[in-house]
Image 1 (tube, helix red, strand yellow):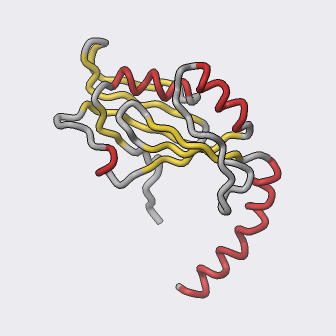
Image 2 (cartoon, helix red, strand yellow):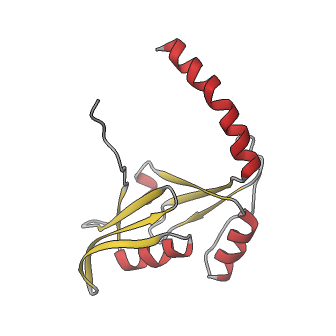
Length: 143
């Protein structure tokens, strides 16, 4: 069956270069751009397991009206938080919500988009792998 692949959310941003610099602090790498250094038409950044594209917004960016947030994972939340704070990025304290008892923090990108980062190490991954067959079976029963 034909399928779509390589899903890349595209964010409207005030400043493509500023977005690139911010997401590089999170570990994303610049992969491609269009335009010149003075006025980038768009940019694509990748991280392990994902990608984002940035395009200049023709209107004021109102992140709280976009209805989107980004959830990232790290295997060392404390070290990542320390790294980001040292880079001047404002991060929340680490919280431990019911759905992410191993820890989670939040921050905002230069345009105000909400980013949540959860701790996801080997123990969390192993538990998740054990739950997949059960979740798939329940979904199949409803379909």
